[in-house]
Image (cartoon, rainbow, N blue to C red; front, side):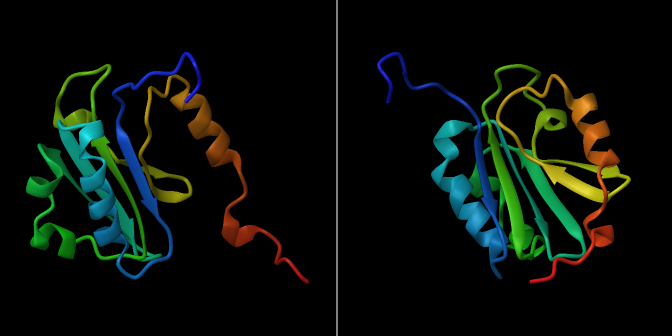
Length: 138
């Protein structure tokens, strides 16, 4: 820690990439980060084709029952536990957020306030899709 640093309450964010039990690891990560936020939690997962999400108000262990986790099977996952610094304590503000874009469905979890969300979305949508990028040859 730097001299001027001090503990701050902020949301907890976790990401799992390319693991056959990504949703379970995301759950365990959120459980470990529960002290970072106790008002809501959510996990978005993907099997590489479909995106699934579950989020609710409350504590991680209460939200992610065995049935809820079974519905999140995937190899990629992001999770979020919220400590509100702005916005109401309501399901509307729980993360991750999932939206339809010109690239397909995307899910996002972040720690902070995205004051330039519109600009970021336009930049991302203007990028060439991965499927249309030329193959990299070695």
